[in-house]
Amino acid sequence: MDFCGSFCARENRTEKRAAVMPPLFGMVACALFVLMISSAPLLAQSPGYTDFSSSTNLAPNGNAAVPFHDGSVSLLRLNPAAASQKGSAWFNVLQPVAGGFTTTFTFRISAGNPGPADGLAFVIQNSAAGTAALGQDGGAIGYGGAVPVNAQAPGIENSLAIEFDTFANGWDPEAVSQTLRANHVAVQSCGTFPNTADHTGTRNDQHQIPCQLGINSSFESQLADGNSHTVEIEYTPATGCGVECLTPATLQVKLDGATLFNPPIQVDLTSLLGLANPSDSTPDSAYVGFTAATGDYVESDDILSWTFTPHTSTTITQNISPGTTTPFVFGAYNYKITPDTATNHSSDSLTVTAIPVDPNLFDPGPNFLGAQCIPYGGNNGKCAEFQVSCGGPDCATGTYQLALNFDNPVGVTTNPNPGLLDAPGQPCPPPAAHPFSTNIFTEYIQTRQDPVIKGSGGPRYSCFVAVQNVTYGSADLALLNVASPNVKPGGNVTYLMGLVNLGPATANQVTVTDPLPPNTSLVSASVLESTCTFSFHGLSCTTPVPAPCSAKAGVVSCRVGVLAPSSSQSVTTAVVQVVVSLGPQAGPKIINTATAAAINPDPKLNNNSSTAVTLVGKTDN
Image (tube, rainbow, N blue to C red; front, side, top):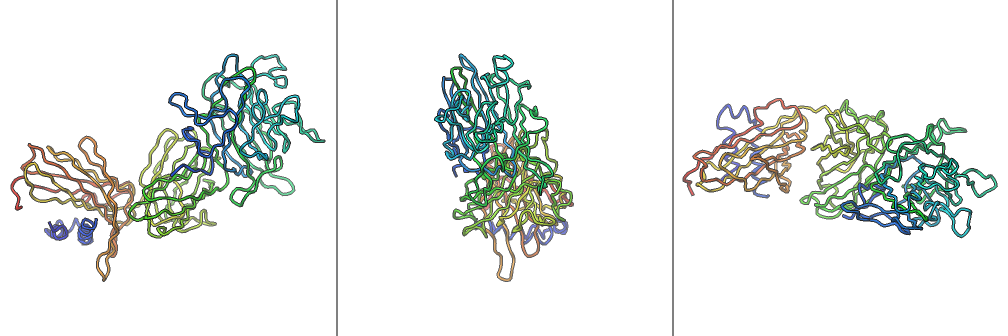
């Protein structure tokens, strides 16, 4: 069958048809004909564990075990419910802590017999032991030293610990008040000296500064009740510092949503600890992780999930491979990229920098007036923009699928009119208005507080940001559905559907739906998209890779995604191919109507649908 001739003939068959299908669609038809005949381990910069089914980037010590399988749950067990246990686990990449951070984790403390004791702690440290750091057992909770002081059993030096204490030692407020069971949260740091869990302890220097920075035992949560408890710790650096600072550096802790320190604890990590400066990418950094311990009384100390999100820009460089989804994890949010196998033929190196952005200062530029960047949960109320650069042979020609996964702020469950804006080749963020030129949004998925925004495009490696309240311009979709005019009984019918966007705006979240004719069954369905350029030298088209469509309850749904507007020189076309087999009762006439739709307003809905008619009977073959 001559599809190009058939399409062109159909276009000019009647004056009415010509009015519906403009002359550009003739070029689409010929482009369709050409198309048809031509047709990694997770590495992370910051902790982002929804569970601990993988131990990647974790360094356990002592009695810690990861992954520890407790029924169907994979977790980080810092210590089992046995006597005199101690464990620690550190993320093995230094984290930039001085610029601020938010860390959120869920823990579970289950009392043994006798029990419970002694608790667990979140710790920031830059000790000489690095990721092998581990303090003492018992009341030291795995980060402190022996009490009374024993030089042979020191705590982790150059550290700050937020402890969740479950046993009343002599230095604990519960012991002073003769309450047998401890249940408090405390912040402990002896500066650069070895840390201690003794709340009466002081730094080992001439100044004798107390190591306890704050303590709270008047909250409702019971730490060692065997239930899951959620902690959010936020460190905010000082601002407006000259001779003095306008606002001091503070540390706040929330337990199961309750704020524990009012006002927040004033502590400056830069002056308190000797932080690491290994490179410009991780200045003023430290290792972060957990410790826990038991003594004569016992408990199991488990971490169920954990994210750590720096408030400063962080960078990841790693290889991306065709057809493989590669995640770049930045604490509470991540960036995923899947290079297309047809246009990406080799592994390229991708560098992604996540840049926090104040939503009040975000400017989408003139193309997307009113759009607002989406704040990410665990990011201090900030949005995130991703500056991306590529090194490799396919960077200039490759295409890809992009997904941004993140936690919504608590209480936010929807993002109205979401989008994924792209500023090709621009710095991110720029000093003035953002030069966003494209919305590559294809899909938004809301799952509890974990939404996903997806997009597709290329060749384009630049600046991306997830936004809401996008106003979409008009996009005129035009669909043409063709099939063989005759088919033998019991045979197959192949439908070819050519789809273009006549503009003026790029069409987003484009889908083609095709209810199957009665007494037919689906054999296969796929969609491909390509750009064809017309010149004096003829027609030149990119070679696409078909993507499968889905089918449910007799309706085929093909996700096209983004469809660029076409012009007299270049046309981007999506081609849907649906093959059906005829049942015994099919005929004598098979009628198939497909429809295209987008999230954009469409000024001419009458060309969004197209019908193909096939007669069942004898054919010319």
